Length: 403
Image (cartoon, rainbow, N blue to C red; front, side):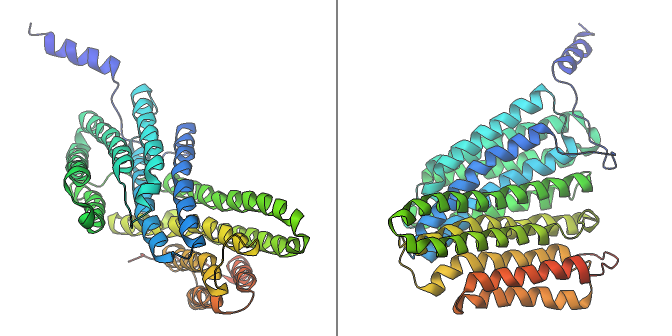
C-alpha cells in the first residue's frame, strides 16, 4: 500500500505525459500543422461574421451590422488569441493536447453556426453562440489544469487562468438562461470585460514565457487568413457579377475596376502589416497586453474589408441601393481603422517622426475619401504611397516601449 501513490503517479505520467513549458528562446520554432488547422477552422467563424455584416450593410443598416459584427468577432478573436498564447507557452502536440484542441475546433464550428443570431442585435439569439463558446473555453480550462499539474513553477498562474475562465463560463451560462433579452446587449459586453480581465489578473502571479518570434508569426498568419477572406469574397462576388454582366454588358468595366481596386487594397494592407518586424515590441506584460489586445481592431478591420468589397460590387450590379458615400464607407472606414492600428501597434515605436505623422494622417484621408468621387481608387492610391514610404523612405530606429 505505501507504494500505491507513486505507482499511480507513474501510471498517470505514462498515460498523460507532463506538459513542459516551452523554451522562450527555442531556435527555429515555427507554427505547427495543428496550429494551422486550428486557424483554418476559425476562418469559418470569421467568414460567418463577415457574411452577416455584408447582409446588414447591403441593406443600409450600418449601425446594427457593425454592432453585431463587433460582438461576434470579439468572441472569435478572444478564443483564438487565448489558445495561441497558451500554445506559445505550453504547446506539446501530444494526444491529449490534440484532443482538447479538436474540441476547441468543434466549439468554434458550433459558434460559427450561432454567429447570425449574435450578429443581429435587433433580434438576438445567443443559444448556439454561447454553447459553442463555452465548449471552446471548457477545453481551454482543461489545458490550463494540465499545465498546473505539470509545471510547479507556473502553477499559480495556470490555476488562476483555469479558475478565472471557469467563473466567466458560469456567467455565460447564466447569461443564456437567466438574463432577459432587453438586458442581453449590455450584459454581453460585461462578460467580455470579465474575459479580457482574466490574463491581466493571472499573469501577475508569474508571467508565462513567450517565444516572441513564434507569437508574431502566429498573429501574422491569422492576418493573412483574415485578409484572404477579402480575396475570396471579392472573387466570389465577381463571379456572380460576371454572370449578371452577361445580361448587362455595360456593367463589366465598372465591375473589373472595383474588383481590381479591391485586390490592390488587400495587397497593400498585407504589405503594410508585414513592412516591419514585430517580435522586439513584446518586452514585458504591459507591452504584451497592449500588442495582443490591440490586434482585435486590426483583425476586425481586416475581416470587415471583405464585406466592404462585396457591398461595392453589389452596388455596381444594382443588388444594393446605397448612397455613394455609404457604399464607400463600408470599405474605406475598415481600411482606415486597419492602417491606424497598424501604425499605433507596429510602426509608431520603430519609425521616424515623419512616418509617424504621415501614416495616421493617411488613415484620416482614407476615412474622408468616402465623400469624394472614386473613393475606392483614392484609398488604393493612398495605400500604394504608404507601401512606398514604408519600403523605401522609412529608416527604422531603435525599438522603444509601446506604452
